[in-house]
Image 1 (cartoon, helix red, strand yellow):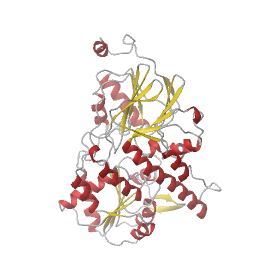
Image 2 (cartoon, rainbow, N blue to C red; image 1 turned 180 degrees about the vertical axis):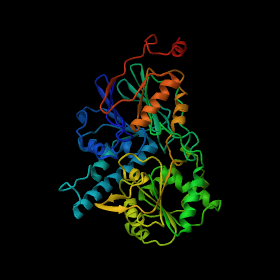
Image 3 (tube, rainbow, N blue to C red; image 1 turned 60 degrees about the horizontal axis):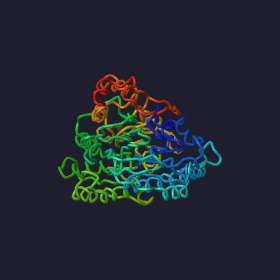
Image 4 (cartoon, rainbow, N blue to C red; image 1 turned 135 degrees about the vertical axis):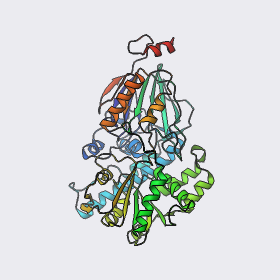
Length: 470
């Protein structure tokens, strides 16, 4: 086996790992680069090999930094299977259609208003490309090993994080490669804890929060403080949110806070048709998360679902306290941009920014204290109160990642730390080396590594590992 890191190496976006086995090529994840312009430009790069030589694609989950590049490969001629869990397939249908529509709309908007440097501005892919990509999805069940190519099998286990997220165990010629995907938290209110894995010859582990611990403060305490403070000054709380996972977690906490009379009975608007559709999937796949039927019903009943453009525009005219949850989570596109233009200049309002903000995104600039951000060719002043919120993360923090790693019965021959900003990845690398004694490294973009069969007597295996193997 051989593996090439085509994304999420030295950065937290663009997950793509090309696995070569004999004369076959399988792509693990197919994500978009987001954030800094120099990263986003990689989305336009030619692919590593002719797409006709790609045998299969396997997705860990449906976030765009893991599946959003799929329509590009399909536009360029890929026609093979795309394997994922059933829930991931359903989510991908929603996210890819929405992503394509937004890209077409933003290109059209840029051309109409003339603020693009390109003439004309083009979408990375179209809705037609996305529809073609969706026909290639092949749902797999968790805990069932499936042959995805001659001599190559995959087993998916629950990873927590979001609905449908999975860790991958890929086996070929006696070599076991495990890819963590994005790991969830052990005590997440919505999702079950990531399943323990006991064996891997080679391991890819994410490091989004590899250099930090999540606050111990319950998220509902901070949410209540921010919402009450904003309501007292007659402002509006705007929350940029991912449509998958984050929006539903916010709805759940706000539902509980209203039940406890910890916040006023303010109107809550979910301004994302995509998040509305995703919420229905949480009701459909109830066995895959912790929420009861009563919880699902209660948080939906307490939320106004905004679908039409006219309803969305009307929210910008609100002059009474309210809570608006709108996509996207890092303020890179979508309806939240129009709300930012309307609400961010007003010091009565609050921008509540939950979760990780990748470098170069508007969300990262806002959290860093930028006096203004550029939206649709205009500099929009940030006078609203800005509140970062890390307690709503769906990613395991450094201690929780280490806890998951300690579930392995012996050290992998080598561990690759991926999907993190440089400092986060390197800090986690040091912890794995020092605390576990494992062979570990942080690959760089387009690095290519060999994954030879493991020899129990080979140098580099810790003595404890030798004892287990004997």
